[in-house]
Amino acid sequence: MDRYELPASLSIAYGNIDAEHQGLVDTLNAALRMSRSEPNAPVNYFLPFLRNLRDGMKHHFLHEEQEMAKLGYPELAQHKLHHANCARRLEEIQAAIVAGEKTADKDLLDELFDMILDDIIRADSGFKSFLHSRNLVAPG
Image 1 (cartoon, rainbow, N blue to C red):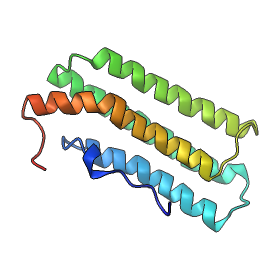
Image 2 (cartoon, rainbow, N blue to C red; image 1 turned 90 degrees about the horizontal axis):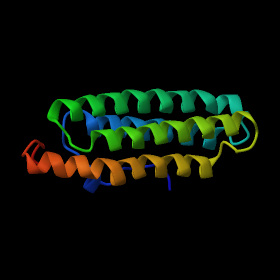
Image 3 (cartoon, rainbow, N blue to C red; image 1 turned 90 degrees about the vertical axis):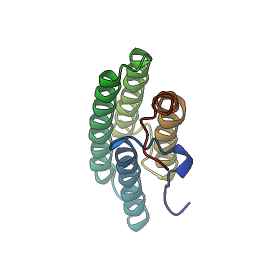
């Protein structure tokens, strides 16, 4: 894989949610480019990407939860738990990298991409269905 891409079928088509998802993937792509240009870079080169990913996820999760609350999404509490688990998992990954228990490499980036996909597929698909049921998505 030359770069990470979100399939069009995962589009939520509501507000800035798709752009926020893409921003997370763009962060991974920047890390992928860096890892290819400096394959033996020390771990501290990779940490800014993880911080950017963490900050992007935090912003996205907060925004998404605010939108869900505003719309009366009935699964909001469960969705918040899912977000908390994603954030915790990212913190654990970052701690493992700093401790030398994980390597900052393509496999790690694949794992982080899978985490983003998992959030969109498992958690956001219910919100997407809710939006469709209320005709709140942009025509696609």
